[in-house]
Image (tube, rainbow, N blue to C red; front, top):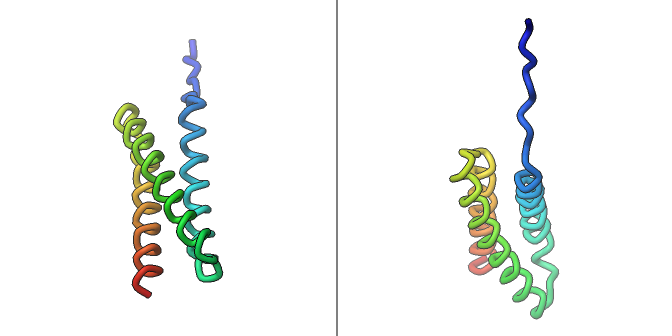
Length: 94
């Protein structure tokens, strides 16, 4: 008899985390492209919210990747955090 190979089912929580990481990249790129035209309240609030969101998402991604060995999601999150850090430093000192 032929063995039926079942496709690996991806948990819903893992799919949600992947979408949150992609949304994070979009938010960081949108902030970096629009940061020059922001007025003072928004220029202070938006980076603070992005940093807080990145901290929470990083904790979630690290916890999830440690459990499942899902490294590509971790690499994408590291890239996003580095992009935000470089962008914030360039806006701060530039």
